[in-house]
Length: 127
Image 1: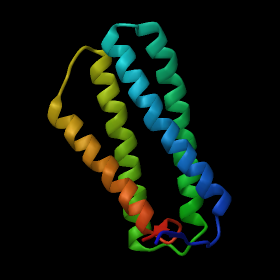
Image 2 (image 1 turned 45 degrees about the vertical axis):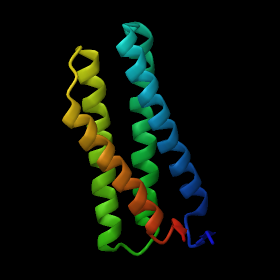
Image 3 (image 1 turned 135 degrees about the horizontal axis):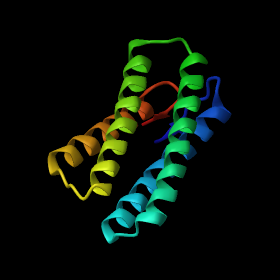
Image 4 (image 1 turned 90 degrees about the vertical axis):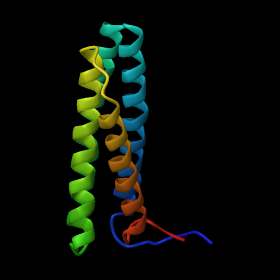
């Protein structure tokens, strides 16, 4: 059975989850627009995506500051920053017309690891 663990930062947890879900959706929208050659629309969405990255980072740092910092929290923060970096690199490569499959694979692996670690930590979900 899945149950939510409630410890400080509940409202910010929801904002953080909403921000990174929005970031992933915007990332795929930007990627598809660049792929279709709709550069102007993609550039606008890419700017919005970058603003959303700031929301993800701000809410993430707030969550880290609201709990007792452990190695797991530091790893999650590092993976989160790496995820944002790799998402940005993949989007910029697509903008330039380059496609680099190993980067995609690594990006998705880091994203998956970040999400799983976030669910495992105390503010996440218990299975």
